[in-house]
Amino acid sequence: MCVREERVVGNNNCVPFLNRSLEIPEGPLRPHFVKATVKVHQYPHGQLAIFHGRLCLGRYDGDGVLVGDLSASSTTAASSHRQAGAVLGAVARQQVPPPVGPWPADFVCPSP
Image 1: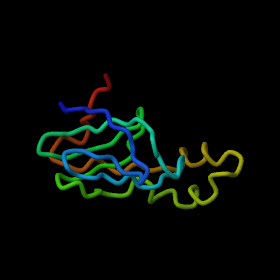
Image 2: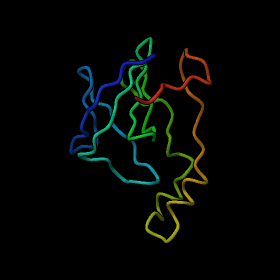
Image 3: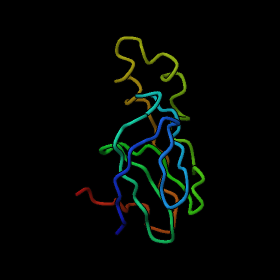
C-alpha cells in the first residue's frame, strides 16, 4: 500500500512534497519534466517515488534524497536522444535498479 498524490513539476525540474523539494534526474527519454503532472507515491516508512504514467522518474529516501540513479545506465542514449531510433534503443538498453526499501522486491504499487 502507498499514498499517491498528484503534483506538477516546477520550472526547476523539482516536485514539492511534504516541505521537501524532490529533484527529478535527467532521463534518456526526456531531459526535463517541467510542468508535467506526476504522481508522488509515499510508501511505508517514508520512502518516496515519482511516476509519470508508468515510468518511475526517481526513488527517494525519507529525507527526499535520491536513491540510485535511474538514468545512469543510459548516459550514451541521453547524449544522442535526437538521433533516429534513439528512444527505442534507450528503452531497450535501460536497466532499472531493484527497489530499495523494506518492502518485498516483487512489490509494485498498483496503478489506479
